[in-house]
Image (tube, rainbow, N blue to C red):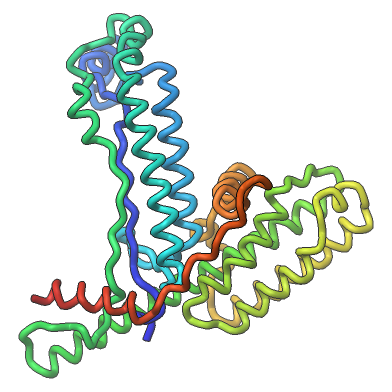
Amino acid sequence: MISDKAMLICLHITMWTARKHDKRVSEEVAQSHEANTNAGRYNKHLLDQAEKLEELRTLAGQIRQYFYKVTLPWSDEGYRLLPSHFYFEFTNQMSEFKTAYGTLVREFLDAYPTYREQARSSLGLLYRDGDYPDSSRLAEKFDLSTDIIPIPCGEDFRVTLGAEEKARVAREIDQQVKQSLTRATSELWLRLMQSVAHLAAQLERPKARLHTSTLRNVTEIADLVPRLNVTIDEELTALAQETNSRLGGFTRQDLAEHPAARARAAGIANDLAAKIKHAMKDRGYDTTDESAAIGHDSGTAEAVAAVVVQMSDPKPTDPAPQPAPAPEADQIVARMQDYMELMAS
């Protein structure tokens, strides 16, 4: 059962925006232009050059990138699919993120009075004390947490209904799970296809600068695909392995300095992209929905790569990392079953 192989997880990151809608200024602007009061809004930036708040925003972005990288889409409510064998790795990484997030929050709160004094001069007549919460209330506006629930199953549907109605609802639940699994698997195909196609497009432009992250992103996604492949799609795993074996041997330096190697790699990447796209079409998957994949523009790709490198590449002076113990599937399933029983009681 899929509930033995994966679980659903939702990420929550809350943060003070340091922005405030100024109704008075908005009305003054509307009146001066003889416009309706709903014609626009003036939003103030309450803090100027608050470095610690910017660091928090950057970290929050890295956390979200990691979350989307190791999970697959599931529902519109924010829950995503996490394979069971990722559970301990994921929780350990999130624990590190939470520690770093908490440290930055404390540093920001320590610097908050200074930032607030700086805002008095930068905002001028727009400054109002009432726009700024006190430090104790401000601390409550920052949080990082995750919710984990089991994948719903028709057999777990426990409500007092007639047998026929209960069977119908159970079928609907199982159908929804099947549709969500199809969506998750199609995104995994799309991630692989778009990363390879993006590399091919870069390689076909002889004068285009090839970023290290572009090549690395392909191999990292190809490595990740089998681990996220909860439906055990053998063709998908085979294509990911073929991608690694055929493109993994190229280096950015070789591709940048040797036109023949660049042309050969472009041909391989185009061939792989075509094979992946053809297989997706055979399955009825959308090959054009760019919104489903982790971004492959250089900025996003570099951000994702930075998070992965940060997690997986120890410094030369660091001791060799010890492999995490393999999670016991029945241990995780037992936790999920306990949760289901608690919810049903």
